[in-house]
Length: 182
Image 1 (cartoon, helix red, strand yellow):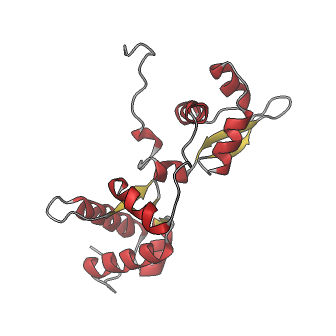
Image 2: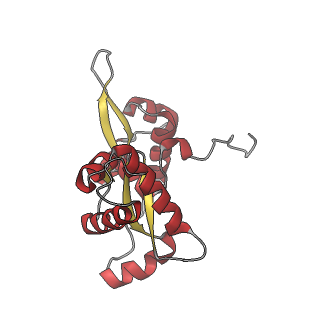
């Protein structure tokens, strides 16, 4: 239960819902705890509990509470994306190319990696794909390698987790061999 007893669990969940809805972007459990006046642990526990309520089959909803590592966000369920795009006038065509998806997969499964590593795995120059992924905020620079030239190291972002509906990178499906054999 809540340590400070200023609000009940149900009140805290409703406050969390209102704040996440208004924010429109992921908020950390630390930020939610401070806003609501509860501990970080309670904020995370309540968010996970509320996420399960959103997914309950007895009350289907058009939105879900997505847990993103140390943060959470209210998002539209993917099945309703065409309706939301239509309502907001969003055109299709924002999808990533096969080259960009391949580059993203290499980064996601091997992070942090250098562009030279990506180029070596793909067998072609990946500068454009890396640029596109940076633009879409699916990857970010996560430092530099401590070798001559100090190449940039790339890894995935919280936006990557949100876009692909993952709570953490550990939820990526296991890799299989190219022929389908594991």
